[in-house]
View 1 (cartoon, one colour):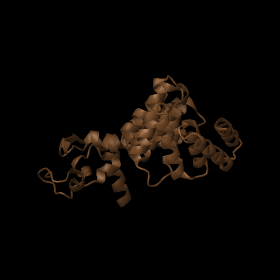
View 2 (cartoon, helix red, strand yellow; view 1 turned 60 degrees about the horizontal axis):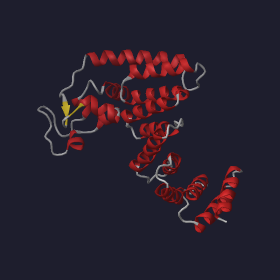
View 3 (spheres, rainbow, N blue to C red; view 1 turned 120 degrees about the vertical axis):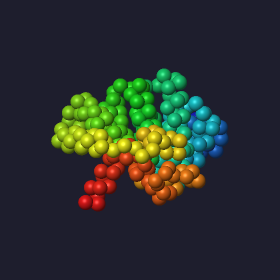
View 4 (cartoon, rainbow, N blue to C red; view 1 turned 90 degrees about the vertical axis):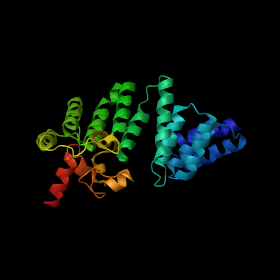
Length: 270
């Protein structure tokens, strides 16, 4: 009976009948509460119905029962991403587990690292996004275009406009018909990169380190948006360097690293 209910759930899901599939998987779970595949099927069906909270509960149970199934972890991560109250660390953990278990079995599915890279971009954590995108390229060379697009976006978040330009240029070479890119937009970015380089040449960092971490590392890890954080917000009780107040921002302290942020701020004020 359990096998029949689970099989029926799969058939209904394939037909797009997600309500009926959910109910079939629920029957399978009642018949055998240790069936990880049934919990996974129920969770995926619930996700398709936008019932995200119960979907996450079902998928958490699935990975508890079958903790090395990469696809189960991936489904859990995907179920959590639309939830406004989802803990980003939980999403990252699920996608990372999917990637690790997939790599351990030699799987050629790059969805987990690609999704992790995109999610890191949404969190303004570009350094980790770059690592995830390159992990995807190592799994499946066919996703290299998307990898370069992701890396380009991450480099842009870091304010590394020249490197962003190079990554986007590589993506366009792979697919000249890419709708997200054009030669005109790349030409404009090239001009922007040259302007940034000129500005950087005339700026020096006021301090080498912020809270014991180099300015470059801070920007690389969290993107140029971090440049607007004040010393008080970023370093707590640590006194600011001579000549700066607790209201001084990372942009004021680390002009070279924050050149793109400073340029955009000036442009907005003009």
